[in-house]
Amino acid sequence: MPARLIDGKTIAEQIHAETAAEIARLNSQHHLTPGLAVVLVGDDPASAAYVASKDKMCARLGLHSVRVNLPAKTTQGELLANITDLNFDRAIHGILVQSPLPAHIDENVIFAEIDPTKDVDGFHPHNVGKLALGDETGLVPCTPAGIHQLLLRSGVAIEGAHVVVLGRSRIVGRPVSLILSAKKPNANATVTICHSRSKDLAELCRSADILIAAIGQPRFVTADMVRQSAIVIDVGINRVDGNLIGDVDFEPVSQKASLITPVPGGVGPMTIAMLMHNTVRAAKVRHGL
Ligand SMILES: NC(=O)c1ccc[n+]([C@@H]2O[C@H](COP(=O)([O-])OP(=O)(O)OC[C@H]3O[C@@H](n4cnc5c(N)ncnc54)[C@H](OP(=O)(O)O)[C@@H]3O)[C@@H](O)[C@H]2O)c1
Image 1 (cartoon, rainbow, N blue to C red):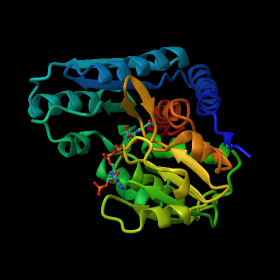
Image 2 (tube, rainbow, N blue to C red):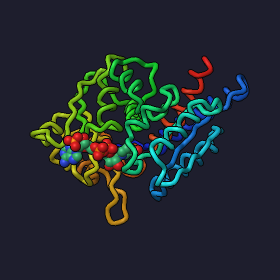
Image 3 (cartoon, rainbow, N blue to C red):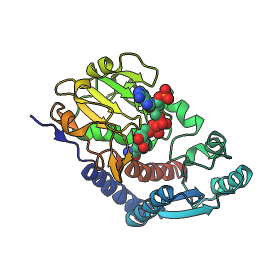
Image 4 (cartoon, rainbow, N blue to C red):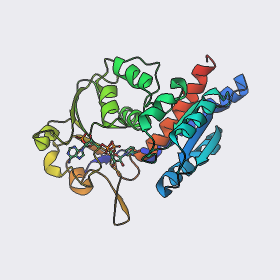
């Protein structure tokens, strides 16, 4: 029987509705409008499109949004100075620096400069450390938090499941493995994290109850790598001949899986939903609400 689709667009819309309701409540009860600043360095068209969609979503949900556009030749020092200003800006509760940054700027230095309480991307070492420690006061990276929500809101039993994560990046693979293996209800999974040096990858994938592919290799996960009735989450976004293709060979794998995310329309919409959610959360923490 073909897999049931996990509809990321619908689930993201549910989260947006919850976020909009919370913003309206903060407005009316506390005269508080959460604010997000997005910093864009250079004129990469894909980054500009992402940033524009974030601006649009802020307007739709009632968030205050500020865009800081800087030229590609901006020095690391100039970018740091902009971040310092935003750290002190009382109307701003979340700061996102759009990556990739130009090669002459060290992303790690930039992410570490953002006030950790405004770090809605969850990349600051304080927030990475809190996630690793299971301390829930930190901000959690958006795509992995979105994957967790997709699983929970689709009724997937995570506790005790064997999750195999393909990819160990700071953005997706590493944090999603920490979220799902945390000693907590709705987590408590047994997680295997794989990467380009892993041996017997196909065999490891076949041992997964939940397989998460985040490697950036189009159609890498084939049907023979998937256990019958497994749950498959495809994080990959690969542009092939003008089309968006995931890391999973969707058609054959969906004949074997019980649940699967499509690309596009699976994990993608969740990232922005969790960004908006994180901004509201940061504003509430800042104001002790
Ligand atoms: N839906 C969304 O909102 C969203 C958000 C973020 C990313 N993405 C997409 O998700 C994918 C991954 O993104 P990322 O930022 O995590 O990528 P990344 O930083 O390039 O990391 C890729 C990871 O995959 C591993 N890998 C690459 N080729 C492999 C192979 N053949 N076998 C096993 N492991 C392999 C790498 O291993 P090593 O560590 O050994 O190099 C690395 O850990 C991309 O397609 C990206 O566009 C989607």
